[in-house]
Structures are given as C-alpha cells and as structure tokens.
Image (cartoon, rainbow over all chains, first blue to last red; front, side, top):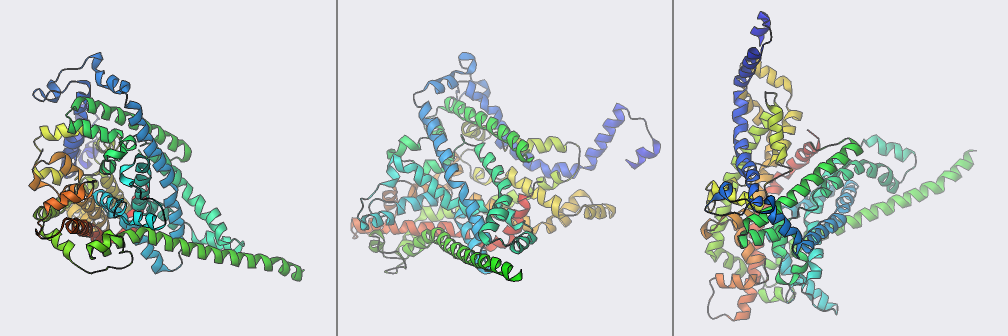
Length: 320
Length: 310
C-alpha cells in the first residue's frame, strides 16, 4: 500500500484488483483460520438448505436429493397435503399452546430471581445462591426426563406418595394428556429460570450505586428502590427477550417433548417437531416431513425478522 | 419549625425502617424457597442412590439416606454397555470440545479483524442462526457425505456454534487493545503469530466459558446418537440413558439388561433397577456439573461480556 501511494498510480480496475489481491494475500492467515468453521457451516447448514428442495419432490433413495422427481401441484403437493390433513390443526395448536403457555409462565420468573439475588445482603450467600440456581441448567434433557419419570411415578414416585398421604388419589402424571403441558413447563422453569436470570443479574449489576444512595437520601424504602430503580433497568432487557422469544413460537423443543411423550399424553404432546421425527425418520416419509419442517422454518424466519423490526423501532436494539 | 419537621419525619422514617425490614424478611424467605426448590430434587436423587431399594420405592427416603448400600452403583458399574457408552461420551466430549475451541477461536479472531470479504463472511455465519434446512434435509445430507453411523458424526455435530463464535469475537474486540496488534505488526509478527502468541494467551476467560458450553452440550447430547448412529457400540451415554430412564417401560428394559442373580425375587429386582436409575443419574450428571462448578468463577465475567452487543 505504501508503495502505491508513493507512485500515485491512477485507480484503474486492474490496479484495484491488484490491490484487492494483495490485501487477500496479506490476510491469508485470516482466511485460513476461518476456513474450518466455514467448511463446517457449508456441510451442516448450507448443504441441508440446498437439500430442502426434497420438500418439493418425491424423494427416491436411489436417485438422491437432486435426481428425485418434482411433485405435482407445481411442487407443492406435500404442503397442500399437510394443510388439509385432519391432524394439521392439532399439531399447530399443540405446538403454539405449549410455547405460548411456556413463555407466559416462565418469562417473569428469571426477572424475579434476579431481583431477589440482587438484594441478598451477604456476599457469600449471594454467590452461593447464584451458583446453585445455575446448576439445573447443566443437567441433560434425558436425565431431567428420567428424574420426572421417577419422581412422578404413580406407584413409587415421591410426589404421589405425598398426594396419597394427604388423602388424595395417585395421579399418572406422565401418561395423562392434561398433565403434559404443566410437567413440561414447570420442569422447564426448574431447569432454566436460574440460568435465564443471568442476563437480568448482569443488567442490575450495571446500575449506578449512586442511584440507590440518592434514593435513600430521598427517603425511599427498599420496595420503592426495586420498583423505581431495579425494574426500569430490567425492562429494556426484558422487552428484548420477550420479543426474541416470541420469534420462535412455532419452533418447539422437540428433543424434550419427545422424551416426555407417551401413549397416554399424545393428545397434547403431539407437536410439529415430534411428528416430523416420528413420520420422517420413523416411517421414512422424507419429502412430506421435510415440507412440514420447511413450512415451520419459513414461518419462524418471518417471525424473527418481524420481531427484530419491532425491537429496532422500540429500543433501537437489533439482533443483526 | 424544627419541632414540626421532626414530628413529620419520625413516623415516616419508622415506617420506612419497618418496610425495609419486611423487605429483608421477604428476600430471605424467597432465597430459602428458591434454594429449596432448586436443590432438593438433586439432593433427593443423590440420597436415594445410596439407600435401600424397598425404602426408596415406598417413599420413606426423604431427608437422609436410609439403609445405606451401594447395590445400585454396583449394578451400574456391572452394566458393560453403560460403561462402554460412558467412555464413548468421554472421547466424543474431549475430542469434540478441543476441535470446537480451535475452530471457534480461529473464526472469532478472523471476524474480529478487518479484511476483504468480512461482511460476506459475517453474513454467512449469522444467517445460519435464523434459518436451517430442518431435521430431514440435514439427516439426508449427513448420510450423503458418508457420516451416517460413524463415530465422527458424534464429534463433529454441533462443533461450531455461531452463537459462541460471536461471543468469542465480542470478547476479543472488547478486551484486547488494538495497540497490541500494531505493536506486534511493527515487530514483524504475522497474523497467525499474533493469534497464537497474543490473542490465545489473553483469552483465558472466554476459552474457559466456551469449553464449558461446548463440553456440556456435547456430554448432554442424546439427539445426535439417536438420529445418526445405528451401531450400538458407537452410541454416546445419553442415548443409552434415554432407553433406560426416559420412558414408561424403562425399568423393565434396565431389568433385562442387568446381570442379575437368579435367586432374587422379581419385586426385589425391580426395586433394585429403580435404585440403579438414581445411581445412573448421579454418575452421568456429575461430570457436567463438576466441570461447571470448577469453571464457574469465569462465568460472571464471560457472560457479562457476552451480554454486551458486539
């Protein structure tokens, strides 16, 4: 670059290319360092996106993704079949209800936790509480499901022992449709509320201590400090999270739902993700379930884009 | 004048002191409740794993272990398939995490610099966070590239999380001053030398956080094994656990898979299988939780930086 400045060459197309070429050579290590990640994304993300075309085709194993023939109805046969299927409403309804109820009940709890943690006076107790509430996040989904099956067992689970001891009747939690959503949502709160509070705890740690001092001088009590200092500092983060979360209302946590799904609770636990898994990989209906997956992904993509727009308008914060 | 204002202030203050005390009591009760709800289930599983099977299944073990025994753990450690899959998971996790760290830090460093095509690369990375091919096309692609039913798929799947790349990039741009790069450049260091000698040594915190994120995700992953592995001896621990723990018929499955002495009664065996489940939970969860507890001092800082928008 220095050399070029001395000679003051006129900027022509070829010199611009030479400059770019030179810059690329100069930065060759950067390209090399990003290459492995790029290769990973191409294989595990972009090739599957290319493979999405089977949603518009009738997949034949011998002919592969590219060679399989296009379906009728301009390639939209599978989509139309899905929209007209009798279980379409049930799948969409179950998925939406699970996510909306989940969001509704689990959203406020991390905020509450953050305020409680922030107001613990002993530093050691504060540290201990913080460490403890993150622990469930590190338990695997399988183990969480396992714990649920054990503790909620109708014959020897501790919860039912308690219910019976109190004079109630034992409940078969894991095999009743009415209990799937509560079990799913409450266990989700137990596992993730602590971890999700990190963001809010971080927001509260950023509050200027002088604000509290000023409030004390003005005669505010602790309830008022929470109401007029803590909450306003959390609200921007909270709206951001709420908007982001509502961008994924149709994408369900298939991995957990699948583990909690039993013959008895299918009426509520049958969601899009588990359906795609069982029909796609279980029964080999690749094209049909790929179409369902694509439909969900497109809806999610639109939701994320629009919620991102809303968030940009509301507080100038965007994701991308 | 002074008398009046003092009269005005005193009741106010008293009320505030009372309100503050009430607040402290409220916080105290809430902390106790939160800790109880969070930790009791974990504690219960641990004490049950050491207790007599019949006492546990009849709900008599609630506060401390009763009828101390290691039968459950014995059964777990005698289950060859379980132990084998445990070691599979150790290998997948260790190798996978090391690869993840190298690949992630490399990409994060590159994205923290200025170079031709940076915008394009950033877009290619970010786009994957918002759109993906979905389960079935991903499955078919993995099969087509020849990774289906290969242990390698358990190592590679999820080894780059774009979210973590962004986190590491934010860390690098916000904690390592540009002056260091200029100094290294003046001394004739190449970009790779700068990356290895300066960026990596200064990124201890984020590397610790990333190793927990990647390590725990890998250790806890049952999905990859379920979808992409057919040969049982390749299965990771969590996929085996799914069969043992997470279904209504689970105890019978375990019963059959366990080596049992023929003299024992069926009920006794069933109870023992139940206890073995508690033990399996403890054994399989301990590595992830211990890793977290060892690294947790890095978390506050690492997560704080992650919350700053990069």
